View 1 (cartoon, rainbow, N blue to C red):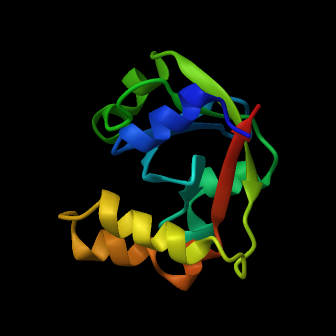
View 2: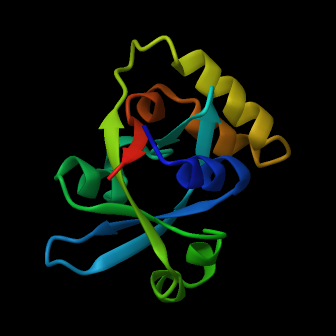
Length: 137
């Protein structure tokens, strides 16, 4: 289970910055969306398995979130890496897990008003196949 701080961060922050590690060890920050359903935080790769942050996670590299507004990673990835981080672990959620409809509904609620193409990407079968539950590191 994730800490209360991580749950609050991923629930209340519209865009979070996930920090993963490249093959040579340098950290990389990526702005992503997050969802919290029944007090449990989740993330999805909107671009499916092709997203490099997703590939880093699947390779077993360390994962953390910037402790604050992750939209900074959209403008300045290096600046995002200067902010404090919260270490987490991510657990794959199977495609047939019954949580997915609730996650889909939360995406539509939390990101209402966002571009339809962005919401559609998060609801695609490719994204659903790349869903993680966020847990304590």
